[in-house]
Length: 283
Image 1 (cartoon, rainbow, N blue to C red):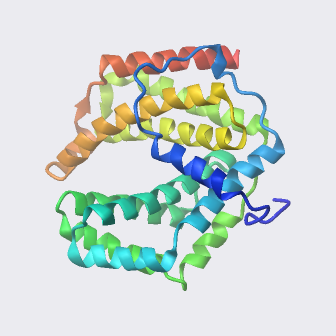
Image 2 (cartoon, rainbow, N blue to C red; image 1 turned 90 degrees about the vertical axis):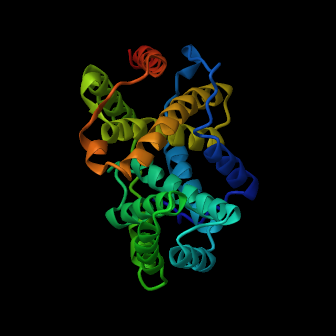
């Protein structure tokens, strides 16, 4: 990185635009379609750097850590959340998740720091806990988060996030081609997919819509807007279905990992369209 992640400073209006995109990244647009406008140009070094930097600033400037830790501790003790508390937790978690996606998408290692991943994973489990009346889960993960986000521990985790090693345009294309191969393998084995496998499949679209939302904040484009609408549709449809699986997981945890599920025909159709259009781009 040739410059600090804190500088140059993005205007608040751009951070607001990106966050608005994030909040809509799983809202279905059933009328959304794909055509040749999905073709993406090469990414410049400046764009790759800017994409990571805006994700960093969205987290750094958007989450007040002392207040967030106070919220976490309160939720851990109560084991439940008011509507306002749920929203505050959701918004903070969204910023953390987007930063994790930035590590996956723009860093040449295409992985998030392990401890940072553990924090976001615990946020998800804590949220599932207080949303589903699992008070012990909310407490256990809440205490872990309260400690991990302390001014004594989090700076160590933050240091790993700041160690950004920008990928090249060709490297990002290779990463996306790898994601496509995962999708094709999953579809070939669609009769042998568990709810957990389905969750991993959905993560591909979650990563991709996050990548595209960040890029269209940096480089506004009708084509990128259209692409995000289609990806958000896939992400939303799969997210709604996975929420059902999570509720059942509290009843039958082993079934979540072992029982086989059938992918809906409508969802399969949309994924196949995506793969066909991506094939045109790659050819």
